[in-house]
Image (cartoon, rainbow, N blue to C red; front, side):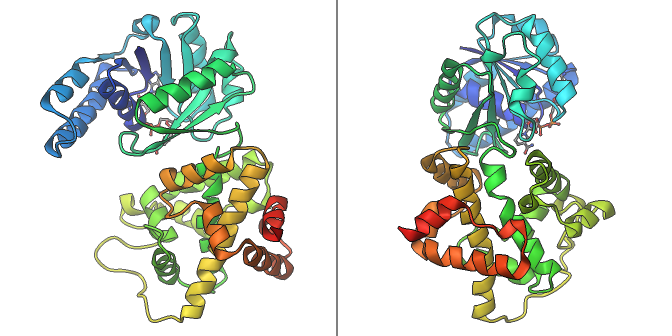
Length: 378
Ligand SMILES: NC(=O)c1ccc[n+]([C@@H]2O[C@H](COP(=O)([O-])OP(=O)(O)OC[C@H]3O[C@@H](n4cnc5c(N)ncnc54)[C@H](O)[C@@H]3O)[C@@H](O)[C@H]2O)c1
């Protein structure tokens, strides 16, 4: 198969590497030769690492690189049977690119977008043949993250979704199907991990260190504040904001002022040396002993919100329960699927916990999903 990858940044280069390693011919396009060569250099370094860890052979390394054609000439895409777009996250930039692309690629070429927050349906609307278009959402870094979300637009043909599922599987990924809703699966379900944690700090109930410690002690690889600092507040805040706006300002996804102020100050997290934490060897606060009861309360507030969000995602038909469990374990590395975790802890107890918070706050964010109520009665 010949795959066109448009945009040789961190995502495009990673996707090109996966396709080439799987034996596909890749045309890697960027606006300038300099940009595409930078992307290619990244691929080479990544392949070098795989080689040194003996994950690939010398021959596989060589052949993968030979299969990638770097170019700044879009006409090269005329032989592609699948094009994946990974350019800047901007509706106008992407739509203008797709209109031009359709004039170059064959009539049966599938066009996919790696957008993480734009409406796939709206992107599709600028195409003359929107049925050939869908979302194919990889996670960062694509070469290592095993999950791919396939997002059919309202216009997408069934065969196109099927084809993308098969391609992702052939590339060694676990593919799940998500309805075209804000945040798709992972970026929607994960919101409370951050927002409920921030809420507890804003209320003065717990410190960032206590919350990180509580959540890692229950098996999460990173506490919410360490994770937000790692992702970067520019990225994390924007995802929250776009999910909130995308759901017509549903109070459940409301961004926080605390994180907004970090952005205002330019404290973007690890990459700028300061976010919630300071990365110069010192820390702002220190973890002092705190009670097990408090640790448990922190965990219960966050896990209840996550399980509720998972139930809502399935209830609203965004994906199947099975795909949701795959998405959270493979897309955000949660130690367990959220339905499995909820069952283990007791759905009834989770509902009780959320109802108690709703009673206290009278806020939308704590409303219980009808599916969760049903599950609690089983
Ligand atoms: N970085 C992530 O964590 C992540 C994860 C999932 C999805 N995404 C999505 O993937 C897409 C790309 O993200 P990224 O982080 O790789 O961005 P990036 O800024 O690293 O790379 C974008 C590349 O696209 C190129 N480009 C821009 N306009 C172009 C055009 N018209 N034709 C050809 N090339 C063009 C740029 O020169 C740049 O090299 C975005 O839609 C983003 O939302 C990003």
